[in-house]
Image (cartoon, rainbow, N blue to C red):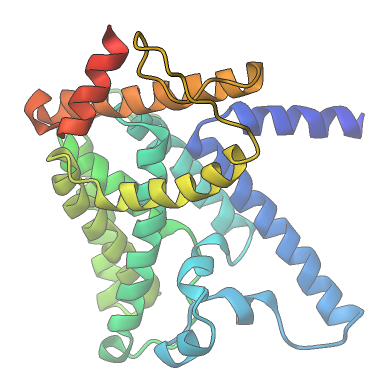
Length: 295
C-alpha cells in the first residue's frame, strides 16, 4: 500500500509542471527538516536547529553561510505558513503557465527569491527588524507580479465572488497589505522581501518581453553543462554524406529520443520568442536552426 502511494507520488512529480514540482519540493523539505530538528533536540541534545543553518538573518551571518540567500525560501515557519504559500503557488503557477513555459516559471521563482532576500538585508538597519527570514513568498510574488507586468488586465475570479476583475487589482491588495505591515512593524522584514520579489518579477518581465531572458539563459547554460556530461557517455559518429548536415548519429533509441526532446525544447523556446517579440528578434543561429528543422 505504502509502496503504491510512493510510486504514484513519484509519477505525479515526474509528469507534473514546474509549479507542481516546486510544491512537492517545499513540502518534502518542510517535513524532512522537522524530523532533523527533532533528532537534533532529542538524540543529539543540541540547541542548534536547521533554521539557524538555512534561514536568512543578516549580512554578517551571510558571509559565513552564503547558501542562506538560496535556502531561506525553501523553509517555512509552521504548517499553516507552508499551506498558504503552496496554495498561492499552485494558483499563481497555473495562471503563469497558461502564458509561459515551465523553465520561465523556474527562472522567476528562483531569482525572485534571491532578490527578496537581498531586499530583506538591505533594509534591515533602516527598519530595525532582527527576525529571521523564511518562506517562499518573495519567490511566488516574483511569478505573480511578472504575470501582472505581462497582462495586468487578465480577468480573474475569486471564490465566493461572482464577478471577475483585472489581475492588477489583486496586486494592489497584496502591495497595500505589505506596506501596512512595514508601517505597523508587523513582520516588516518579510513584507520587504515580498516587495523585492514583486519588483524583480515586474521589471524582469519587461526585459523578458523584449527577448532578453539573460537569467533564464544562465540557468540553461548550467543545465547544459550537466546534460553534456550525461551525453558524454554516448559515442558520436561523423556523417560524411553530402546529403546531411548532421554530425551526431543516435547510438540507440534512448539517444534518439533524447535528441528529439532537446530539439523540440529548442523549437518551443524559439516559437515562444517569436510570439512575444516577432521573428526579427531571433538571432542568426536561431533563424538557421528553425530553417533547418522546418525543411
